[in-house]
Image (cartoon, rainbow, N blue to C red; front, side, top):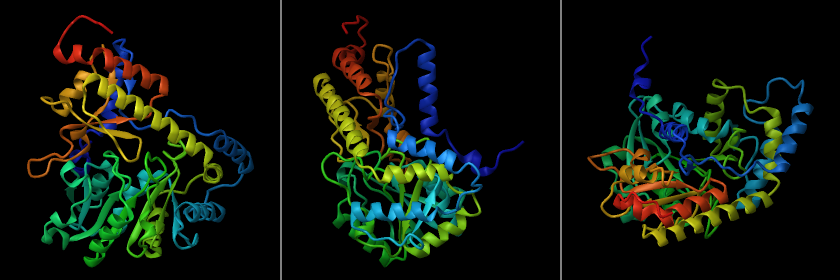
Length: 400
C-alpha cells in the first residue's frame, strides 16, 4: 500500500515527536515536566462542563447538528465579539462554526487556491498553515519572524514576483510561538498591503484572550473586506478536547468556507455547542486562567535569571520563546533540558519553522508552553535553579 505523495512529503508532526520523547523518558523512570505541547492542564470550567452534561440529555434524539452552527450559537459568538472587540457581526452571513480552529485552518486553502497559487505563512508558525497549503496544491512562501524585525511580518521583503502569485496571507495575532502582539496600526498596514495586491488575509486569533500586558485587538476592528478570522475556545476556555471554534469576517469568504465544510464533516455536536454558549457567556474563568499563566511565566523567568539563562518576555499567548544560551543550538539546549537531573521537555524552535535559503528563523530559540500545573512549574524552576549549571558543565555530582 503506497502512500500518496502528500503523505510522503510530510515530516514528523512536532507535537507528536514531543509526545514520543515524553513517553520514552517516563518509561525510563524520569520525572518529566512537559512544557512541550500547549494543552492546558487547567480543568475545563464547571459552567462549561455542566452545560455539556445538560446538552447531552437535551439533544438525546436531535440527530445531526447544523453544518455551520445553530442560530443561537452563532448569535452568542456575535454577542461576544461585540462585547470584546466592538465588532458587530451578522450571524447568518459572517460566521460559521468549525470543529476547533485546526480543521478550519487546514481546510480553508481548498476553498481558495488553484494549483500553484502562493500562500504566505509566518515562519515560525503553526504547521497546518503549511500542510493545508500543500494538500491544496498551493506553494508555501514562508516569511521570517525574527528579533531583527521585532517578530513582525516584513511584507516588503517578500519578492514582488512572489506577492504577485499570492492568494492568501496567514497571520497569527498574538503570534505563536513568539508571543508578539500585533497592534491596530500593524494590522491595518498588513491589510492595506494585502488588499493592494488582491490577497486574502487569514488571521488566526486563537490566543487573543491570553495576554500579559494589553488586550490584543482583532483584525476585524480595522477591516472586514478580504479578511477571515479563525477563532477557537480551546485555549480561551481550556476546551481543547471539545473541538469547537469559528470563522468570522467577509461574508464572501465565510460562504466559501461554509460550502467547503458541508462536504467535509457534519458539524459541531449540539451538546458541544451548548458548552460553547456557556463558555462565551462567562469571563471569570478566562481571567482566572490568565492569572495562572502569568504566575507560571513569572516563575520561569525568575528561574532563568537565577540560572544565568536568557530571558523570555512575551506580550501574550501561553508560550515563552526563549533564546538559547550562548554556545548552544536549540536542539542541543533541548536535549540538555531532557537530562534526568532536570527532566524538562521543551520544543526546539527549529522544529516549528522551515529552513528557507539556508536560514531557519526558529534556530536559537526553544518554546516553553506554560501549561503544566503551577506546582509542576515550581518543580521545574527549582531544578533549573539548582542543577542547570551542573548539567551544562557536565558535572556528575547532584547538588539539587
